[in-house]
Length: 104
Image 1 (cartoon, rainbow, N blue to C red):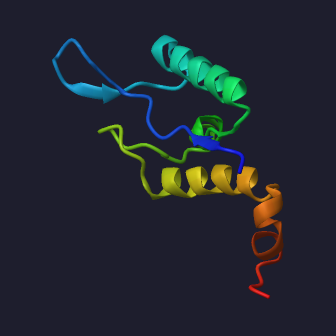
Image 2 (tube, rainbow, N blue to C red):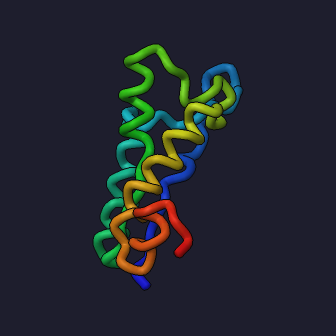
């Protein structure tokens, strides 16, 4: 079976006020982490489900995939599920029931 990596969390950083904040995907630390995960997926010959690109698109539409605490909101969970589905739907072992929505 081919492995699938899901980018779940990019980590947290401490601000000047000492509060923990989520690493943003488009900020330098987040971009570095995403590049490393992509390189690992490539080295493992694994598919990569990375919802952070969808997060950025949704933010441009006024949606909030992440709360101020860095945790995913219901929008973020939905986008992550869609990113994972997009990867899994093309896997031969899952193509039948997953692609058709039928159990037969």
